[in-house]
Amino acid sequence: MQKHPEPRAVAKSREMQAFPLKHWFWGSVLGFGAVLAAGQVFAQDEPVIIESHGFNEYGELKYAIDAPHLDYVNPEAPLGGQISLAVGGTFDSMNPFATLSGTPGALSSSIFERMMDSTSDEVGSLYCVLCTTLEYPEDRSYVIFNLRDDVTFSDGTPMTAHDVVFTHELFREQGTPSYATYIQQLVPSYEAVDDYTVRFDFNPDFPLRGRISQMGTTIVMSKAWFEETGARMDEARLETSPGTGEYRISSVDPGRQIIYTRNPDYWGADHPMRIGRGNYDSIRIEYFADTDTAFEAFKAGEFTLRRETSSINWATSYDFPAIERGQVIKKEFAEGTPPRANGFVFNMRLDKFQDRNVRRALGLMYNFTWTNENLQYGLFQQREAFWENDRLKAVGLPEGRELEILETVRDLLPEAIFTEEALLPHESGNRPLDRGNLRQALALIEEAGFTSGDDGLLRDANGNTLDVELLETRQSFDRIFNPYIENLQRLGVNATYNRVDPSQYQARTQSNDFDMIFDGYRNGLQEGAGLGQKYGCEDRDDVFNPAGFCSEAVDAITELVKVAENYDDMAAGVRAIDRIMRYEYFMVPTYFNPTNWVAYYDFYEYPENLPEFGLGHLDYWWINEEKFEALRAADAFK
Image (cartoon, rainbow, N blue to C red; front, side, top):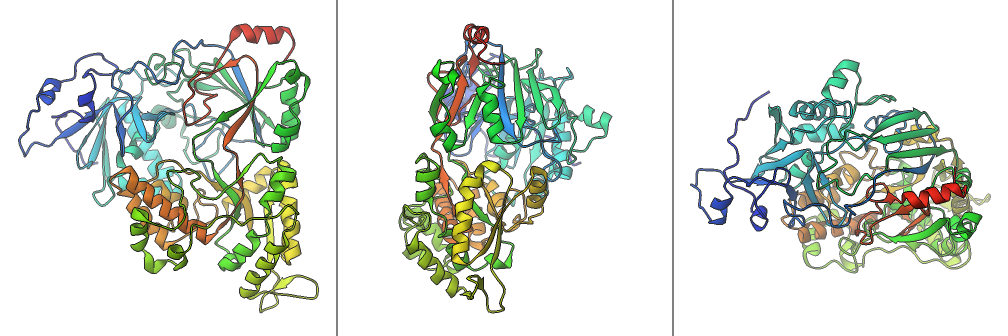
């Protein structure tokens, strides 16, 4: 491997000039601080190297280098107790990185720390955790991470730069195909400069944006463990590499239960990014075959915190004795993170869904209004955009920078993108079948070449019926999906609803063997290279792109987003993509919940100043031991 010797930093981060110049972790004065403060001008042939404790692609860092802890945590939070949660379905692996084989257990990736960590009260900032600082030139042609020398894996062995390089090579060779290809191209060379310094050199043809963030969020696994066991990263298995995180796997009962316990020798207990977090002694995950069984188990106290997703439960079922006695709290928490873009996903790899009129016709048969009011107790909002957030959601007609971006791909887009307002979900009436939408759907489906036969089924010019199977595995969705299937049948679609077991569902979706599924896309407040993995043509068969969506225009705008010079440009590009994808209608938009529904036994506590993004129940909540003992004495839980 080619080596790239480089002198240590000759200048410090411009962001750091505004902060007290002492290392977050060492408390010693940074070299060259006085020189920087004095405005020293370096020789033109001497490269300016930025060194910082954190990184933000577009903006300033909120937390100074000497910040004692995050603003939203309780630094005095007591340690102890167990949080217990429920998960539906099953699992047969504890390897979260084997995405194409096996079903990984819940939280199985949580034992691994990343080089840098994000916060829940700002957008896009990353701060050193496994590193002390990072260094990079202004052209971001490479990044150097200066590692802490006190990080240990849960088995007590030290973490070094050689573990970082080894993990990077695992992802290059055995990671998800789309990611492996991307990382091979992004990072042509890399090396462990010494035991506690690692360097990654970037392909000059790749955009500057996303380079450092990509490598800053890399995880680290133990080289020694893989070499001793001969394990592969892409295979399903119950044994896994030790991590450097607060928790380690304590016990595993495949398909039934997982327990994680705090590592008593966790290296980062006093790290400013970790103070007030990871407050439980253990995390217990209970698996249940269906949500009804899980809910009954919660009522009986078999687990003690439940994130509710069922509107019927939230509206009608929280009247059991523990609620009435005040032993269980039912509460809604605000959530600023964009909700997952869920809906009925068309498999765009199939010929039957290539005509947009067909997709629009099928979508018109979903009745949000009636479903929400009669089956979901009016608790949801109708999803309009892929980014359901004011920063990134396309609204009205395109204008300003968004319009400029769309003009660059005008020849790839229909004129309606420029002349019609961003597509919104159709409106429906208060009857299960909206007659007006049925008439519109019939007109669209006829325009697509289908006619209705004597048996009421739609047929194309060759006499083939329009067969559509909705594949699902969760029983709790039956009451929501069946009315939609009935409406499709009224349209003349040979529609079926097939609920299969989790293993069959996973096998079929991983091999793209489906017509429609209820799925979605996880989008964030800051987008970059990951857009291609979710919506790009090159990776249309990737597990992160369930629809197999592909658009040359979106691909081109994604490249612009990657090189955006500021957040506003990035946001304008995302709004343009949102507008195009809503028009393409490769997913029937359904509903979202703007809050978190949570029920918990009244011994959990959390900070008063909860951050904007994320619930944090596994992060910065804690247990009040006195309340816990009182509830246990009252036999409130098991």
